[in-house]
Length: 161
Length: 222
Image 1 (tube, one colour):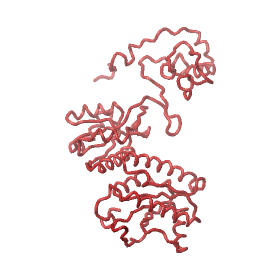
Image 2 (cartoon, rainbow over the protein chains, first blue to last red):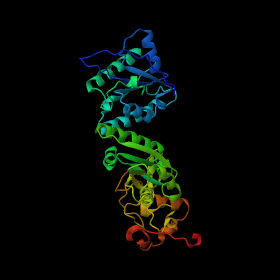
Image 3 (cartoon, rainbow over the protein chains, first blue to last red):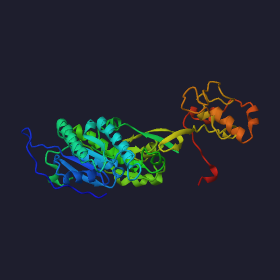
Image 4 (tube, helix red, strand yellow):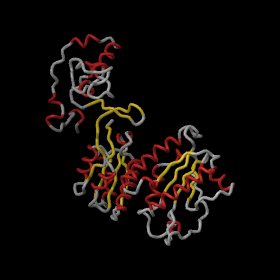
């Protein structure tokens, strides 16, 4: 899988703490990645907490990729795929939905909280939907607080993500 | 094929709660095919247990490997090197594999990572059904290749109970009536006359009921 990261964003201080949610967005090449690109072209603002990983299809995102990120302490993960019925590979997004549902069950059982993982469906033209999904995810994770699996030091400076 | 199901993350975590370094051993045969204890499932279980333990503030180190077959000593040898450096082993094989590993490593605690369900058949993607009870006295020849001992909830050998509903078992309406299947099958192969024979009580002494069984084939002994 090709991975591309957005440039590191300068962290801002919120509520007198230096914690900012760190969110990973697995974005399908055919929809969410293009929607994020479009949001950029349209100069739409969205939180800088999100790190985009460019996936050929959400069906290519293995459960291990998501679990590995959570184990390393990421605060939330957004899986963004095509509208149901609109997958370039027929049913990759439907498979991704089943996998994310299963991981949400696992996260609930483990005690990390299923809200930290979310899957959304959108088309390449829906830049506003992408922006709103990211904002919603950041707000959700902000209310949940830092991942209890997160080590005390910032992840990016450790080079673990 | 032996069909098994994964234990819950909570149960797995509790099984190894007293250990610091554990080997998760998958099996590359039946339980890989039934998506319960192969390399991938061992990986997922490992992530989940490591997360759960880290959340409890009591992290665990997990070493993972999957061997070709856990029910043969020849393959279990491959675990020896890794097993030398861990506190315990969780076997993701069927019950046979777990016990084989426990025998092979007498000083190490060995736990079962799966619940072994039955001998069954893959009906469709991720759906398995039980087909054989391993009774040791096969009667499939009399019943058109459909086992009333395994597939009839009442294990009837002389015709249906009369309780089936639209060709399905009254005990579980999702399950086809074995005797309906037997009738249809015998009709298709023109052997309905077999149903005229009275089947005497089955000899259950070959079944599990008198304890674990043993097979010795003298001609292959060395």
